[in-house]
Image (cartoon, rainbow, N blue to C red):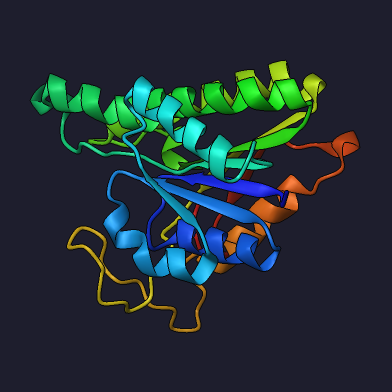
Length: 237
């Protein structure tokens, strides 16, 4: 059976670049998202299996991995991409919306990582990668909910690295510090404005980010990293 990758929280940006790159590497692919209807074209281009899943729901995550087991086997790589934002001053935040965002950004990461780790520990190998943001290491004003979710995700990744690296399971936390180029595709949502590459490289190129994920997976275990920050050369930090 081919080596395989499970990409959770798949969409038209970084996830699409990851799927296309791993398809070129002749890996079997499974894409999971709350809305899989948007993934039809990507599925055709990458021969990917699709599974609808809300990663904040334990049973749905269990069913995702059962589906993955049956169709692509135990993944060599599992990538967790979902996140949710609730913006605004702390005193104005809605508690229920805050909890929902944390469930998606952080708790969902735990559920996915747990199912992946169960299988990878049994096999004795694998990589579990978390896509994060600068909010995971730096809390911004009016963005406390996103910071809570991403700080929690980073803590999960760091703890898992210390626990699972000695068991030959590679953990990666990817701090994406800056905006990702989206291109001028017609399916851009209203809250994700097109960021076209004008040659200045002020936006992170999703294809180049994807290459970093693959390189990270291929690190020799004598010199494993658990975290990397990626940002455009003009980005302040």
